[in-house]
Length: 124
Image 1 (cartoon, rainbow, N blue to C red):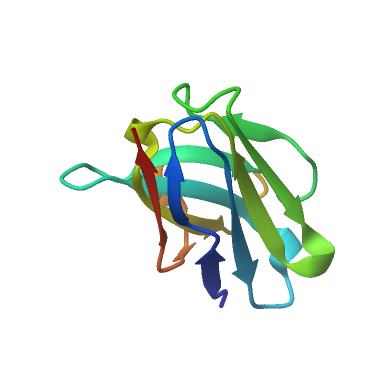
Image 2 (image 1 turned 120 degrees about the horizontal axis):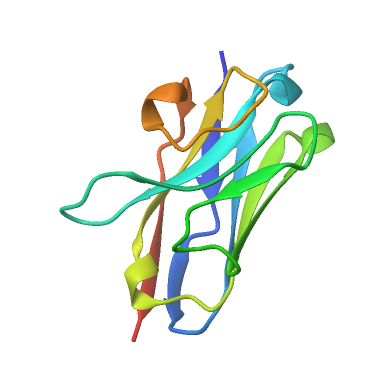
C-alpha cells in the first residue's frame, strides 16, 4: 500500500513558477514508477509527466515539454514537479500517482495509487 500527499500548489501569475511535491508512504517507494496528472474543470484528467522507479528516464506530455521537470528522491520518498513559464491553461488540480512497474505511463489506468491533488491556478 502506498499513500501519496501532494503539496506546493497555489496561485501564480502567467510566466511564473511553482514546484509541486509528492510525499509517499511505504518502504518500497523505489519499486514504483511515479507520474503527475492534472484535471481542469470540465475536462478529463490528463497525463503531465512520469519517471521510472530506478533511473532518471522521464516522459512528458507535449504541452509541458521544456517547461516542466519531474524528479524523484528515493531516499526521501518524494517526487517533484518543477513548473516554469506557467500559462493560464496549466490551471488544474494536479495529482501524483504511483505505478507498481518500473516504467512510467501516460495512461491513468496504469497507475495503482493516487493522491488527493493540489490546486494550481495561473492568472493571466
